[in-house]
Image (cartoon, rainbow, N blue to C red):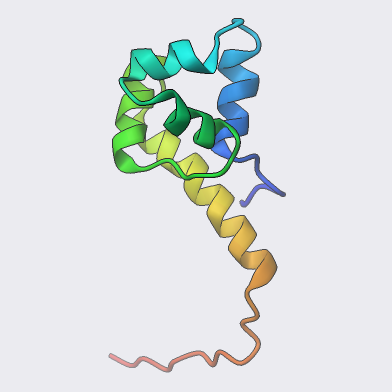
Length: 96
């Protein structure tokens, strides 16, 4: 089942980790060994979670790398569904 308008993973990180635990984006970026500007772009929803970032987030914040990538994938897929017109796409008959 797909989620309705899922949050960007950066929003999830901000609301689940940064704000409740009073963590600065800069301190988390340094612990993840990424530049603060890179991490800030993620938190602002301006960039996606890459496989490399998923591994860093998994080690630093917990959760599996797959779950971080799934958050990003769900977000991307929901937004693609909102903007892509598939009405002209015809099913392809495949027979064995």
